[in-house]
Length: 182
Image 1: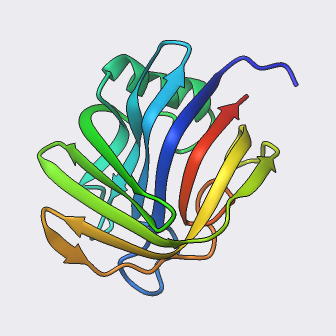
Image 2 (image 1 turned 135 degrees about the horizontal axis):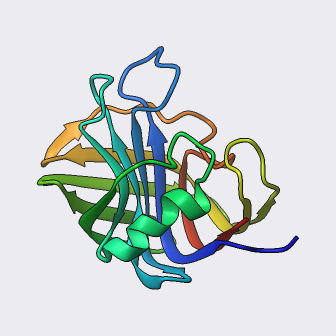
Image 3 (image 1 turned 45 degrees about the vertical axis):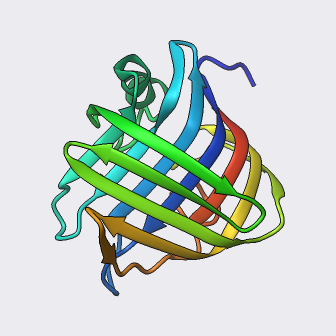
């Protein structure tokens, strides 16, 4: 496979969830890493969706470096609903308390998100081929979490974590290292 665009990361914390039973699509996505490397630079980065009432209150590619955030939509997520998502300045702090738990704190658009993943299972080597969603190859190591919590602006949010996330793997997962390529 010839690679035109890629990104790699260290210490990824990924949560896909719904805040109400019966929702067809996730209304919570927190997909961040301590460090993301791209052809345009390296920085703590990721993507976020917070739509507790259906309409996104916060959505976009986030980074401490806007050039890195702007790379993701047209280069990694081209052809998906995320392609046109805005690039947003954010702070991203990752904490690892291995082998037990990992957490992420993100501040973006004046909103503070905190998630903790615990009950981490043994790591698994993954190698997923491109699909309609996501349209990129994925390789890396994933530790599925058996518990996930979310706070928004310091308040606990009740979440339901589906069995699969948007990347085809577990919806609550710690990914210590990996790569997306297309």
